[in-house]
Length: 307
Image (cartoon, rainbow, N blue to C red; front, side):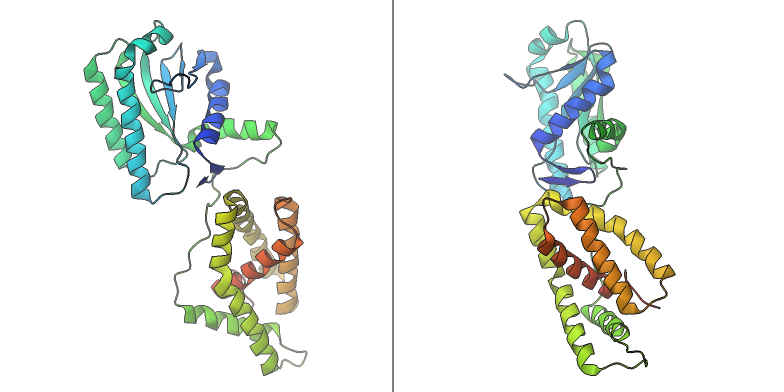
């Protein structure tokens, strides 16, 4: 699956979503889906009235940026070339319409070199002087944001929460030396086990410190495993955590109790939120594991801190 700020997709699910969007957005322009049997001829749909044609592409998994760029360039080249190869077949289906705007629709467009490639293929296609292509034939690159309104309308109709298109797709990386995070955990552990007289017991500090440090060191492997087992669940969890951190910031700013009582409140509230938003994919045990690993990371990286 390919993780995006709108969720996880593969080639089929992305095309299915796009077809619904195109029919909603361009129905009044005479949108026609081009069924992929016996072939799509380089387009997956077109508008009779305005000369727009669409080709969808979504990789089936996450690639490094240079690899994704290469795959997107190959897809554009292959499908633009199909316009020439299947011009007679397309003419029979387009009638008097000519393709003026050819839209490459992919969840993410992240490299300016793809724009350069689009201009090259656009010039090649114009030089063919095909009857099915407008003299001003243009290649457009569309990411998911071009259709965010229509996607959210479809989500609402199906009882799915809308998205603002700003959700993270992965947890932020930690870039400090491990010793820094160990120091943060130790400082906060001492604050968590303070007694009423303001003193700490070294044995209690050592025990809680070791537990918290262990959860922190396990964090990345735990979340990577979760991502491998269920990319969709992982994406929803990352989105949940990014929003929940905003609540944590407010609680920290207004809290008047002890450090440990704040930590307990955040842990309990996080478990509740996970179970409420991610069931049935998450049970009590998994919610507890996620919460403890997350709290340990927040303590180490100072998303959770105490005055």
